[in-house]
Length: 322
Image (tube, rainbow, N blue to C red; front, top):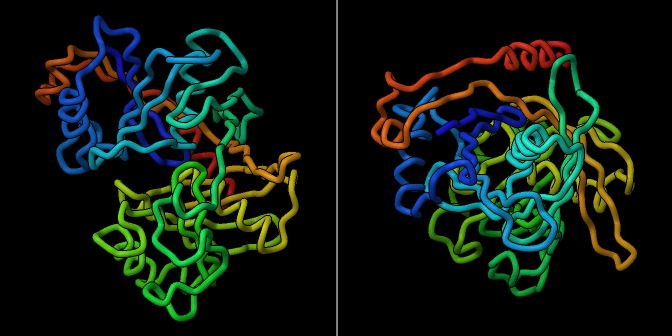
């Protein structure tokens, strides 16, 4: 069994290609593996935000299917940062520069992109579908949509928008002081425990506008907590910036985050719908080989771990941004 430790903007995962195994994992085995690998205190290589599973595509012309298992055991409908790393894995496996990957709700176009920095492997991926409807998001409000409105239960001053891309996101534009304040954790914690507005929880992003087509996005990810970055959150934030602030369709937006930087482009369809491109690093930090039982039973001393030099290149790239 070969596993890669990967990250997109420091949003890190263990990537496992189930199609190379004698059989698929059972759901129980996936959960046990998730506990074994991802725990931040006792997991392998400092744990991770989740597991990316590569499976056989079930329909269409997709090369493969991606499943995203969060560190808490929940399954995400999509992950933009994770999709970039899966795109790279599949591109190298099949020697293909562009193709589609099946996700929970859509087959998404992916391709190799120009490097963001020296020796920083970079991929661009489609983020869609987009929905603002309360039923799709599992949101209990009086209106069908919530765009740039105050939610009294959360704040008397901040204005929120809610959009699914397809992961559901609660977004508010703030100044820098609010971005780093305790208010963020208070609101994110409220909507991710039992509450009347978002019974299934929701990803929360505070967004600071740094300049024309330049954002800083900080995200509390449902099922994970505060993360270095969340790809769908950065795309959802870019969409709301384009609709509510100074942005324009089809222009490149620079999005900074706790783990680095990505580029986004917001597109408008002929029918008035939206989709986004997410462009960023797809870094492999470790290549790991062992038996399934060794992974499951945390027999890490028997596992072969090879550290790549890619994190050094990514760290050097980040230093150039400062």
